[in-house]
Each structure stands twice: as structure tokens, then as C-alpha cells.
Amino acid sequence: MATHRVVETVRQQRAHASYSIDGDANTERDVKTVVTTTSPLPEWRGRMLRDFSAFIEHAFIAREQADTFDKQIDELVPGVLLILADYSMNYGHEHQDAEQQEWWSAWQSTLLPVIVYYKDEHGVVWAESFCFLSEDLNHSNGFWQHAAEKILDHYTGKMQAMGTPLTDILVWSDGCAGQFKQKGEGYWLIRLALKRGLRATHSFFASCHGKGPSDSEGAVVKVALRRAELMLVYFSQTIDAFEYLCEKLTIAKRPCEAVHKERHTIGARTFVHIAAGEVDHHKYTVANSIPGTQTMHAMRNNHGALGVSTDGTRLRACCTSRRSAE
Image 1 (cartoon, rainbow, N blue to C red):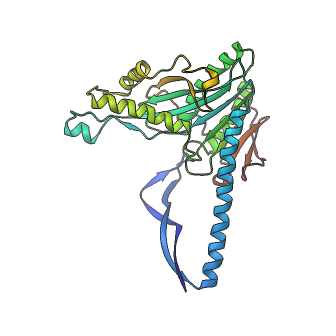
Image 2: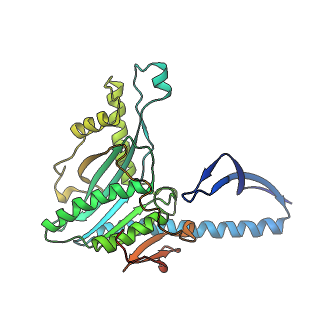
Image 3: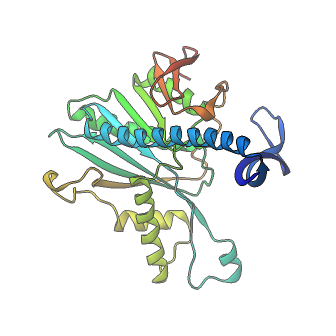
């Protein structure tokens, strides 16, 4: 007999029911737990082989995605944007002289760092940072779409002025279902083709949250704010922190010559404040559910249809959009 510990998914009763957009109640949730089991050696060997095969496949896809991400940056052509997005943990405004009630219910701010890579008029690929701050603590797909539309508005004009109109976007993020990997994102990709005439692919990192430069930008922001608070600078609300960051951390001029830059050197940093109530979190809930979302590694729009990849390379048609821009 062999004893081993495995991670299994079990159904657990919710303390409070959650509700879908359609009003359906969900009283249970999936929870991963470590279970100790004892089984005959042949059964244990078979299970280990199955688990190891799944691990090898996962590790291969994760490495392949990391290589593909770097390759896409290095091989960017004019007219194409590569966008890397990942929500940071909310920033809690912890003041050194806070009273007890304020300490235990500190003001929080949403922080969404987004890195945009593009090839400039001199043929050099630069990374530019957009840090979105908001009192709105709902890390929804609608919030991401709202931020992304602001970025696309900016680069549509910028690239038009460079003489290389924007034609394609390549988006990378983690696979969080509440933020990125969901039907709302697929619907948005289709709308990009119908409203902006853009080809768009959204790839989801297979391993954890795909740590990268966007996480570094989140750290830069949080460290700067915490250092200021340790010096007794008081940020009572998000707008106070936003104004401080605009003054202290904005990068308007590239920090070095192109010959000295590295792949992820930040050439510009811009802060954007999204006010509470500015985002309509349920704007795109008319989309139908997409089956098998958890196994997807990428979504791509294709003339009003949505293609998805479940192995990191191939795309298959899974649904067709109504020919509407709304």
C-alpha cells in the first residue's frame, strides 16, 4: 500500500448564496483541498503517471507562452500593439497617525497597471506604462474594457500621426474568470473588429498570474505611496494618491537612448484616474456563455466570429457575433 497527499476539488456550501446576472442562485462553490489517501501500489503508480503527464503538459505550455510573449515583443511591426494587463491587489491607505476606526477600515484604491509595447517611428520597440487608479473596487471585466478603450483611443491617434495606423492588438493577461477569461471579453474582441476594424487576440498565461512588468509597475506605485505615508503624507482618498503619483512618478521623457534600453524598459508612464460610477460593469452582459472557458489559452476575433485556443496554438470557431456594433 502507498500513502500520498493530493489536491482535490470538493463542493462546499456557501455561507451566503451568490447570484448570476440572470438571477439564478448558486449555493455551492468549488474548493481545492489537500487530501491524504492510501491505495494499492499499482493504483498509486497509475495516478502518479496521470498527474505527472498533466504537469508536463502544463509546464510545456507555460514555457511556450513565455517564449511567445517575448518573441512577439521583439518582432512587433508598425501598426501593432502588444498589451500586458494584470490587476494589482488593492492599495490600502494606512496612515501612521490613524485613529482606531480608520486603521481597521482603511480607504482602498483599485490599481490596474497596463504595459503597452509598440514600434516607434525609428523602428525601436518601446514599453509604455498606464496605471489606472480608482475608488471603484470592482475588478470586473467591464473595468478592464473601460481602461483598454482609453488606451486604444490614445494609440489610435498616436499611430495615425506616425503614419502607421493601428490594425492589430495582442493582449496578454492571467486567466481570472471574473476579470479577463470570460464571455464579456470575447464579446469585446468581436466589437473591436466591428467598431474599430481591429484584429485582436487575447492570450491567457497558463501558469499562475503570468508575473511580468505590469506587476513591477504595481510595486513601483505601492512602494512610492507607502514611503510617502511613512513620511506622514496623508492620502485621504484615491484622487489624492493619483495627484501625488502624477507629480512624482510620471515619465514624460524616455529615460535613456534606444541603444541602452532593454526589452521591458519603461519609456513613458502615465497615470489615469477612473472615478467611482464611471464604469458600467454590466454593459456587455448580453453575450451568451462560451463553453469550456477554463481550458482556453487564447481568444481571437475573426470577421465577427470568435475563435478560441485550448492548446495554446490552434484556434477553432466557437460562436458567431450578431452583426451589431452594440
